[in-house]
Length: 298
Picture 1 (cartoon, rainbow, N blue to C red):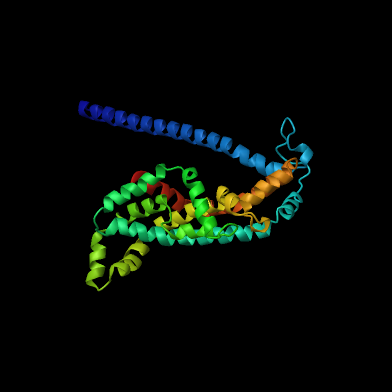
Picture 2: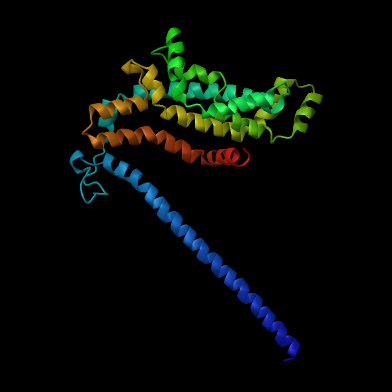
């Protein structure tokens, strides 16, 4: 074997060793990463598992030490019993009315306002947008009493109007900000092409912008659903009639009336949380995309 061949073989061996070393390092790094993720997921899931497990136990075994992770016997009857006490279907109806009405209003108004800030040219546009963003710093408790006085003077106390009508006037700063940022990523040439074809301002909005912004609109819808479904303070302030309670209020009232029945309380909490879990797993792609949009391009 010639000297040149030996040198060539040594180079090939070194190159092969480097590739193997990099592959080994990558494998070790991936193994450590997945191990930490699995351990983290397990730790995060413990409270949820305790919730579901407690919901299936007898009340005398909820706080056993050491914990009884697998209920014995399993009491499926806790669920119908809890739902019967908290008037579940009546509260579910009220919650759905408020949630879907407010979500529709938020989508409609926030998409229009965001379109104005993203595409229209008018004096003071940027200043107004900065003022709008600055309202995020204003705690809602500051305006709680004035807003309450306004709604009571309108005769809206103990109705769903204070919980739904404001969504039709602006839709919230976060939704406007997120949609505006997404609209600005849509090429302006598409607007100009639509105008050449005869579309007006509203036509550009409905035929060009909205179809392109489906992921952002889906994200706003998910956030809106979660916010209104879980809203506790609003219904607590504006709803006095027990028949108009939402699920969040009913769960709070259930806790007050059955403070010692932890198994029933956990069963009720599981059922109230279930729609949010289904929504998250069904739309997690849009949910994560929305976080990326607001976090990276904002």
